[in-house]
Length: 353
Image 1 (cartoon, rainbow, N blue to C red):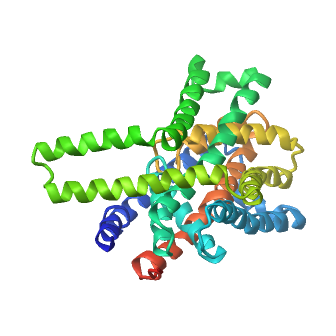
Image 2 (cartoon, rainbow, N blue to C red):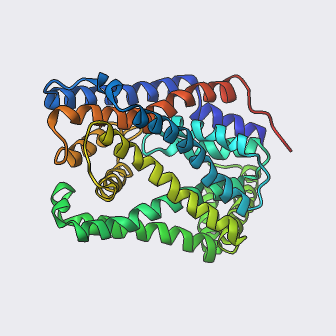
């Protein structure tokens, strides 16, 4: 297992790849912000934040503090439902690692692996940690994706801002795949194992795997697939209070994330209803789920600007965009850099039985 963990670190967490991805994220973000600033500047200045009412500034920083806590609590209660024994402090550190890794890897793929690795190091089995991370992600994803059709039905004009007449088809396919994965893992696990066995048996027959290696891989995958499937089913049937808290803190976390824009707009002197902001933010995050760039850089800035340009003056759009990304992402990313290098590179994570 230690050898596999080391291979995992070498693949996903080596310094060269981390700096490369982080550099790509910074480059795309800076270019996007610069381009949007050139289009919408009209005298806009980032020091406008210093002129916000004191209560708005305090509210933003309080929101930031609780934003990270809510992010940790949603995973914490998923793990509690699965009866995983881990402290909230360890989950809280994982919040920043996840923000950093998710935002420097394409399609946010690295964040889930980082969480699973960290949880394993803290004594949570692979199947349980994988199930917890997937459930945490699916809870927020399904809440967002199920909201999009209702928003579009109520705001038909928004369809013109999204990728054409195929939006509902994309949405239906994406939701179907999510539910299909759940269905297969819970009710058709043997079918998945059958095809996995055939795949590796084919590799063995072609002498791409030794008999010993084949047996070792199959036993390892089957063992953890069964544990993973059991934990997914266990969550659905788990202690109701923890399932409820998982859902509640997922909702609160998403509302907290969307509230940054609301407070920044208040600071800029706008009175836009929270409902309007909520619907536009859901659409922005929905678009970001399909972005292939690290941290949805470029896509997030473009989509956000496109939607909010209809509601604010040109001179205010760039400060709004910058401070939205700054508080909802950039601060967490930079904290995550220090936590990541301490826990991963400096050996701050210790194995626990």
